[in-house]
Length: 311
Length: 248
Ligand SMILES: Cc1cc2nc3c(=O)[nH]c(=O)nc-3n(C[C@H](O)[C@H](O)[C@H](O)COP(=O)(O)OP(=O)(O)OC[C@H]3O[C@@H](n4cnc5c(N)ncnc54)[C@H](O)[C@@H]3O)c2cc1C
Image 1 (cartoon, protein in one colour):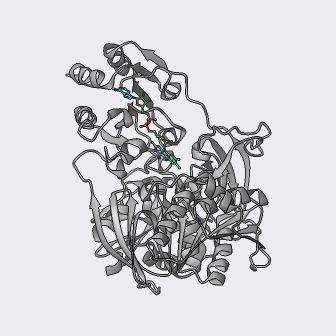
Image 2 (cartoon, chains in turn purple, red):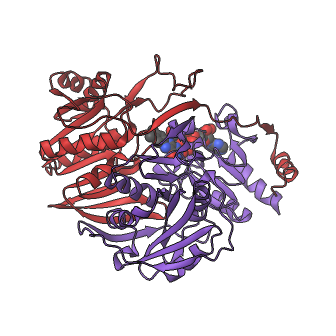
């Protein structure tokens, strides 16, 4: 039977929400263990143990695991790999950083962005910014290393009670890579990747100051905030808000694209959104081709009116 | 110091691709091909490092069929000193691409590799990390800033939570994100000059690389289309629709 090791990502003592989605994908393949790499990771391991369907949580504690550095994590993951047929990470920046390094150390190919499981060694994944979907079949005599496109999976339920096992791994951790600092834009708004509602602004918003209208509508709706590449490049919004092929791929129930033209690279990030609302003053903007509800108008009059109408 | 920059020939980012009716791939007939945008950013960064006097030579490499010479000419016109074409099937997998690059890094004794973070055709995003693993060296993916300091580099990375800065010893592999720089436009005289710059051709066999793919890619299909939407006249219409759908 297939045995899957899911790489559990954590930051600041919290398990990444994406992991419950990776577990859901992994359950379609076989028995699932989750590995947590942390410095003092009891809390994170306990969170992972509560995900329903997890067989066992492996806790690898090491001071170097305080920050997720691919060069340190990869040899530790490889040291755990022997017992598993599949090793899966998420499509987060941590997963995308470390998993190919793991695959190369194991001398196997990687399947990026698994969007559905067709068989133990058969998957679907998007290519060309999601404008084509392909089947990928992997030889079953090799370990499978992959990343899971989390926007394609629901989170596995809570309510599990897996055992947590502390393990020591025999891995040589290189010293050529050192953590220096992180800078987060922070804020109390819902996380873009798990928010049910997201309001995104584009170049049409015009400036960093004007982006206040986006934040204001988002707060009214309890929504997360996103941005197009043009808005990020122009300095209107921080880079971690970019939605799209090369930013975040999201699947909110409701998405507002405000002053965004609808380039294919942007649309790649919202293909799984429930309802897309477009607000744009150009009636011919391509965003209207994919929007469920389109409103042609100037965002600077539409947004205040919309906020007022929401009461 | 030598900097090696891998570049890939891909369908231009402005093209709306069409899946072939027999599901065997996408239609490439008469489609505009370009340098993968992330690789262009990688080239630009390597050139800026050289122009600051921190590197002596920038070598561009492409692994693919001979049509990719066109893309090598483009990056030579941007300012790369020379280029290498490794002849291989254009669907060679990231692992084999990384093995090929490893052989070249060793042959050229390059201290820094700057690659694009992903190719916009297969969106795999694997080569830089795999190459770093094979070289047992440092990697810094999704870079938005690179500062060299002797035999190490400080790299700022675009990560989900914001920006992360790490320090890596050279040799290292860096992968370029969108905001690392804005690539220069190529001027006509540079295109003429680039015609005289050398392109070496090598085979996978000469580099000792097995070009057999492990994965089988098949059954290409278009994604399921969204239901056609509607337009509303005003804010009241929008609010009404959202309520109707139970979203407010
Ligand atoms: C390799 C690569 C990767 C990329 N990755 C991404 C990505 O991940 N995400 C992404 O978003 N893009 C990405 N892009 C960029 C993409 O191609 C587009 O350039 C970008 O999405 C455009 O952003 P925009 O829609 O905000 O700007 P524009 O295309 O300039 O559109 C602005 C829109 O605002 C409207 N507008 C202006 N003023 C108003 C007003 N007052 N009221 C209402 N509407 C108004 C205009 O009508 C227009 O439609 C990528 C590009 C490349 C080459």
